[in-house]
Image 1 (cartoon, protein in one colour):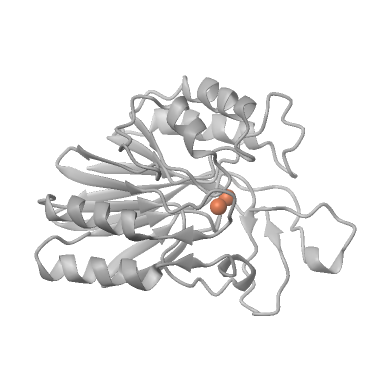
Image 2 (cartoon, helix red, strand yellow; image 1 turned 90 degrees about the horizontal axis):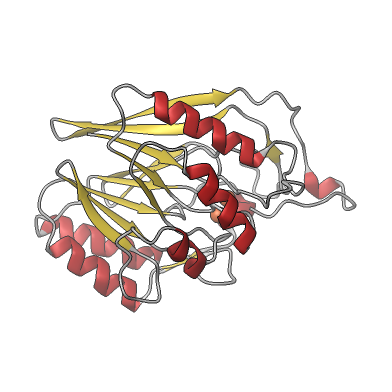
Length: 277
Ligand SMILES: [Fe+2]
Ligand SMILES: [Fe+2]
């Protein structure tokens, strides 16, 4: 089973004039072109949030237009830049659950994929609350075989402090649920997420967790807790998660090598247009 993961495309409106340093919409078009050329073809493309830059209707119109060219099944989750209801309306064939949170679950080629909406409307951070705990616990109780959990926010502290600061309310609760369900024989075998705009891997409750790389600017790699906001035009692309013999292997497909100089240290330039990821 091959699962492609796109994330943080931050599509802008038709004029694309809000794109910061790189052509956000052009980058998604290039990712779609490359995804269509993958051989073997991924069974599904999962987009782990921040599909639109500001959650505006015109952005979702552009997103839908661009995705008309994708010749693969597509599933999307909201990120903190998305607007849940607009995302639901843009992708009506997604098996959205009937709840406030825009989550879904489906089985593709024998792999259960659970999309957990980690967003809080109007907030940059994440939440795993009573409703979501009940829903995810129930989903895991009824899952047999390999399970992938997809969500926008990484369920771990990354060490890139200005991004971590938004927080993840209920992170310990999520880890405890995953550990309990694993003991009961309902293990998640892979966690995929976005939000950090750069590839980062960790382990939560014994489960490998992987942040996908954005198709636009990456968050600068600066582990100084006092560091300000930094963005960098690192090479961009998407991830290919391959599942065989009970093992996940993650590959990175680069589609653009950046080409715009590093944009350093926003905090030192108070007059600069500050990005909001
Ligand atoms: Fe983002
Ligand atoms: Fe985000």
